[in-house]
Amino acid sequence: MTDIIRLADELGRLLRARREALHMGKSELAAKAGKVREVIYRLEAGEDTTVSSLLAVAGALGLALRLEPTGMPTAAEVSARFLDDDDAA
Image (cartoon, rainbow, N blue to C red; front, side):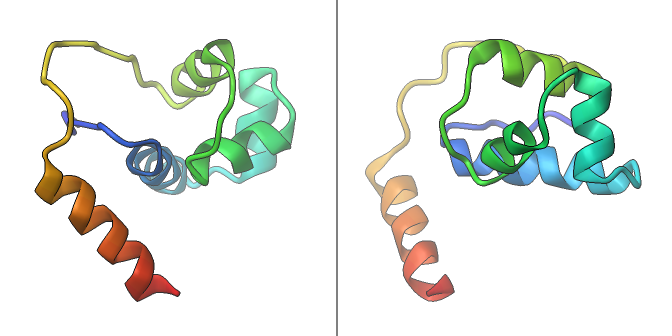
């Protein structure tokens, strides 16, 4: 898994997909990460949470974070993201 993630909702979708691939419920993941279930909901929704919570959940999913220079999302990527939101509504 080597996805490039630039927006919080992209991270949320990746975390949810990994959790589901492991056949793990939100409560189970929260317990394994030592966090409350609300943290899982917030992360998967792309909402704000702490870095320590993100690292704990990623670790519980067998994932590690890797940071590398990639620049900001392009205008086309941001525009496409907002179009996706409009389509979902």
